[in-house]
Amino acid sequence: MNIGKINRISIVKNGYVSRLKNIPSPPLELYVAGTLPAKRQLTVAIIGPRKPSAYGREVTTRFTSFLAKHGAIIVSGLAFGVDSIAHQATLDVGGTTIAVLANGLHHVYPATHTSLAEAIVRSGGALLSEKPLGYEVRRHDFLARNRLISGLADVIFVPEATEKSGTLSTVQHALEQGKDVFVTPGPITSPYSAGSNRLLQQGAHVALKPEDILEYSAPELASELTQTKLLIGDTPLETDILRLIQAGTQDGDTISKQVQAPLNEYLQAITMLELKGDIRPLGGNVWGLRS
Image (cartoon, rainbow, N blue to C red; front, side, top):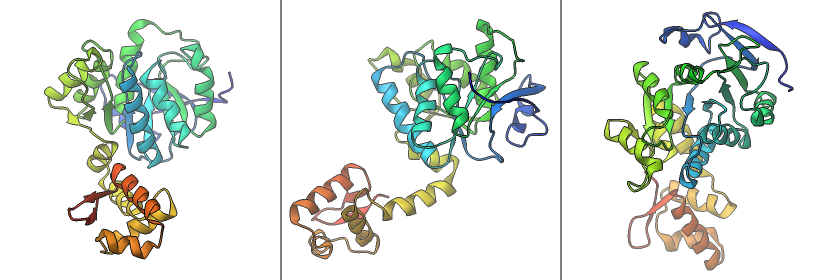
């Protein structure tokens, strides 16, 4: 295993992890491989089942990619399922992720995620544990580890959870720590979403899109994102259309003439912008930016 030097740090002296001193049974020290952020920035814990449905995998990837791409630190537990999906999705967009392990950092558990752990460290993230080197994990250690995951985070996101999912342990820690919990609803007929829907019924925040988390937890980032995204499309033609609408040109015929593109290309571009949610129809071939 190649994760470099393992450092022992005090939670009091390190600015990023210092908030852990306020959680129940705070660790006296932590073992870290890799690089912790130099300062606090929006940190989102993404947690979920070890055997998510296809829907859960898709939601996890979509939300994680968006949040990581726009500056959030992603924290999870390196377990099978949602945890590893979240770590990998973060790496895929060049983001920063932290994996909190329940065992000592002398090896990775589960062992099949060793290469993922190495990639996390290599990409500028970190592996973290309160357990000393040589400590082998026991079942109850996972529940204890969960308080660290929620403790590091500003907000917790649950893409999917069954009725008796271990995910609910982390949610309980988060609530005790006064953290906001966001949950994506799922089909009421799916056992994979029974826990998620129950959390929503009990008052968790609804997350229908990743922007919901960003707008609530980091409005300044959401504001910057909105201004940037409205001006930049996925193609030059989309960008031209967005900039015209931003400048106040909302009539479709006028936009079509000003972008000077073949009609079929224009129609394809404006349809894609609508499907992605960048613009919305106002009626009568008039377009506005997403509110």
